[in-house]
Image (cartoon, rainbow, N blue to C red; front, side, top):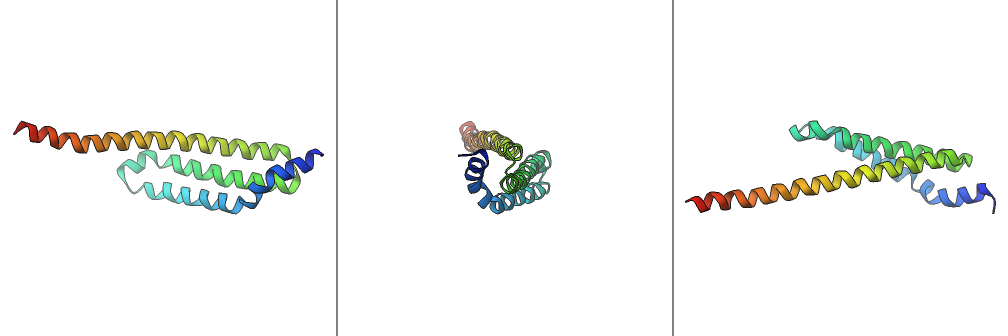
Length: 117
């Protein structure tokens, strides 16, 4: 099997999903833009905006790679997707830790205040 056929077979599922990838990217950008409306969001809004830009860019590179059989474009799209998932994983982990701290604080402070009386 030649290189072009392999690239076409590997890129095809992503090419078919390119519209959804771009749509998800746009939604994440909108989420980041809406985050600006909160105090905490002003600090972190750039992260979802960056993630959305990565998804939109990956979608464009996937299209180009599939239509031109360009392995460099395909590698670029995969690099952008890998960066997106790294950021997503770190961001999700940080948000879980912050949520657990918030829940523990919400439970422990009233217990501590109640123990004083």
